[in-house]
Amino acid sequence: MSQQTKQSLIATLTEDSKDFEVLGMVAWWNVRSVEISTENLSSLLTSCGLDPKHAREHNYRSSFIRALRNMEEKRIIRMVEEDKNRIVYQFTAENKTDGNEFKLSYDPETLVSINKEAYRSTGDIDQATTGRDDIRSKLVASFNMEKNTYRSGDITRMLKRIFDKEADLVCLRENGGVYFIPSTHAHVVQKVSQMMDELGNSSFEYLPLPNVSSCRSLLKNAVTDEMELAMQKLHDELQNSDQMTDKKAKHRLSKIREMQKRINQYEEVLDQKVTKHLQGGFKKMEQHIMSSRVLDI
Image 1 (tube, helix red, strand yellow):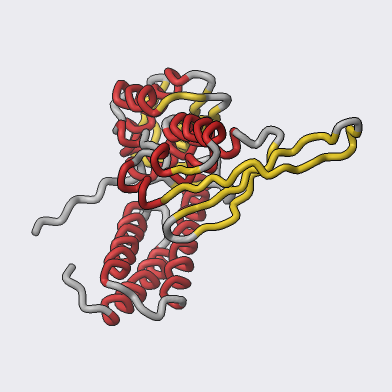
Image 2: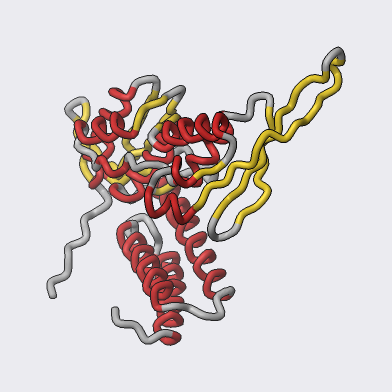
């Protein structure tokens, strides 16, 4: 089997008639007040050369919680029961007592229940939900809207998914918000930039990260921190897992190999000691998983 040649992290950028070496791009974005349907967002992604599947429907639980929040004016909504088959919420009206603006009264309105299995099998929230008709119908309408609506926070998470999947993203700040993207994925950056321009009320900025010692050090630290965090998380999972199914073992081996590939990708900015430490740590975990399971991989 032939080995795939690893692309160099360092690329040459020509600007103002001058050539200079870059490691990649630093990118950040800001999505302001945006609301767009899943259908329109999918079309926008397609027109910009991005996978429309990134604009997926929200899951039923997230959509249901959003729908509940839309109905919280002058009422309190609390989950009172949940098991593997259903979730039950109590709706309680909150009103000022007549003649006393400082006193509130609370009147139970209805219990709303969603049958998880019925929704999973049919995708029809109307048939899966019980409760007082007027409240239930408003909740169902709100749910159907929320399931297919992307707002600012959803767009931000979608951008993160796009870059994680297609562009080998590295977070440069502990709290997120500023990211490194290798030059080999410049085409993805350009497509996302176009999408954000057409989306409106948003900004997407990026700058080249020059191949100088201070920038190499910045990137080395960010990659090392990311790998150390992934290693610690996997270590904790293995320590707290008495039994490991073949499915879990294969998933963890896949994650390890993904991390090993990323270490190789950034070998040009990682010093030999760091590379050896990271590769050695993941190799030990790989051997631990392989020795504890008999896998057809």
